[in-house]
Length: 280
Image 1 (cartoon, helix red, strand yellow):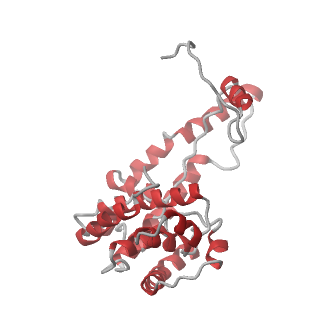
Image 2 (spheres, helix red, strand yellow):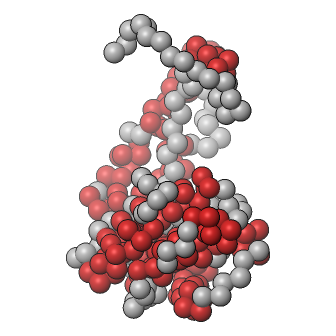
Image 3 (cartoon, rainbow, N blue to C red):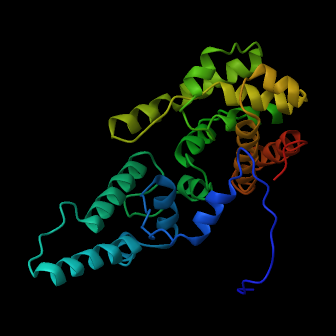
């Protein structure tokens, strides 16, 4: 309940400061600020059930719009004269939506009437950080014929941030020929789309090697100690990468109607990487 009756024993440690916990519990809550960002996953999902004009209405009714209106009203009350925001939040969001939609139209995921194509429909089902790249790899056949451990490895390349990828990749040597060939092919398959994204001003990252190697070794049955020896990464970061890979594979499993063979292979890959000490 909401009562204040009860006791808790807090033991100090390097990652557990009772003083800091006490300060945070008694501090006021942080302000809620809109974190809305237009991305391809959002645009695909919006176009599944809304026309473009309806999306404009949704943006105008968003928390970002509400907060912008609140800031303008506060300025009126303070000084009476209101200067227009340097950047109109709603207009910026609308233009960003149109930019993403235009790119999706140019790549065959949305038609000229702003409706999802067949490829756009199954791509919208991928609740991923990089749905367009994964969808492009699927429609180019990058995963065709790959066994479960290779599918897990290839999907793992889409789940990590690029902060440490370059550093780790330099320290690794991929001796598994099948994995190396698959990664090279996938990079080639994604080359055209990646270039178009970069030329259109969208952020694009290089495909990292280390998560693919880690997921491949783990799916092949390498021990946890052996995995951390082969790919020198903190245990927590490695566990998170594997869990996110399993989540991405689960999204692929959802494509049973459009890509039944790939969905089945993804389903077989999940238990290969979902084993101790990695659990959801």
